[in-house]
Image 1 (cartoon, one colour):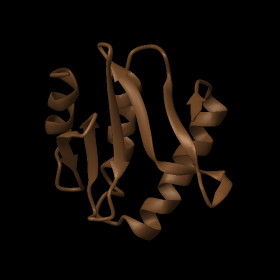
Image 2 (cartoon, rainbow, N blue to C red):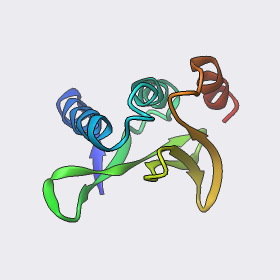
Image 3 (cartoon, helix red, strand yellow):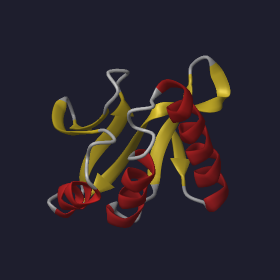
Length: 111
C-alpha cells in the first residue's frame, strides 16, 4: 500500500488515472476528477492510499482508500464503467459521467 501525501505523488497518481480512464473508462472520464477533488477536501487529514499494480511497479492500481470521519472507504473502477464507493464490502454509491456534481457533493457531505 502506498500513502499519497505530497503533490508529486498525487500528480503521478492522477495522471495514471486519467490515462486509464481515457482508454478503459470513457463513462467515468468526466466524473473522476471531481470525485478525487471531493476525496481530497472531505477525507480526514491523513492523506489517502493506493497500491501498485501487480503487473507494473510504476503504475498505481485502480483503487484508492481514504478515511472520512474515521470511516475507511474505498473507491474503485469496476470495469462495468462505474466508480464504486465501498465501506468494507458494502456498496455505498456508484458514480459515472451521469452523476451530477451536486449529487457527488451530497454523498461526501453525508459521510
